[in-house]
Amino acid sequence: MTHLVRVFQAAAMVAVAAELVQLGIDSWPWPYIPIPS
Image (cartoon, rainbow, N blue to C red; front, side):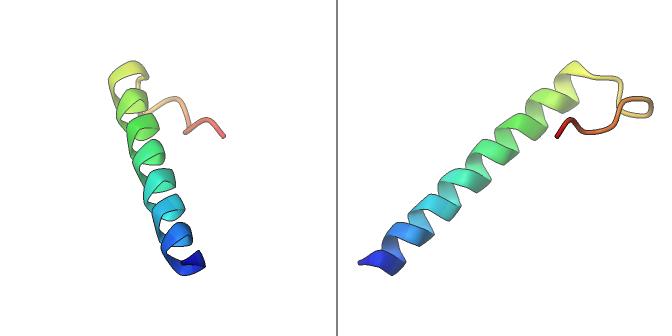
């Protein structure tokens, strides 16, 4: 069960990261501004 929870958490983190990246692509001029940390 713990393994499944970890997999679910990892998938959720990936989804959140992808959403943040998409927002960054939509919001910032990429050649000039680095990815915020």
